[in-house]
Image (cartoon, rainbow, N blue to C red; front, side, top):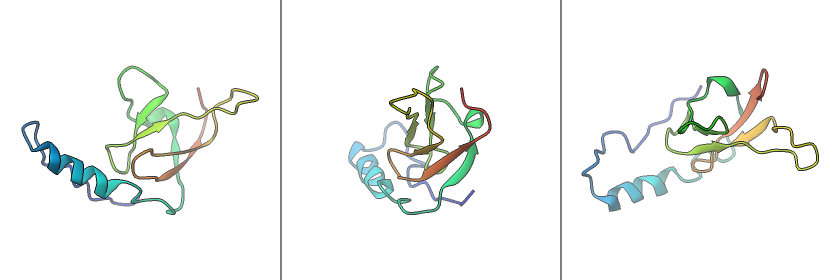
Length: 95
């Protein structure tokens, strides 16, 4: 997996919200156009208790929101981070 410098590392809960917003803006779309990363859905870090919302393993701040095929309702094998834009291809069994 490619290394990605996370500009949010080191910001504590008392940091200025403006600095955090600037860091988020710097991450936005940063990985659009990069080749898809193959990953097992079951190995992703989850956000809360939902198995359908995972943290992006590249930027660590964005989310992968599971998309479903509208006609079959099966989980689609391709996904992307809503923050950095990194594409992912799920391998293995999907829930």
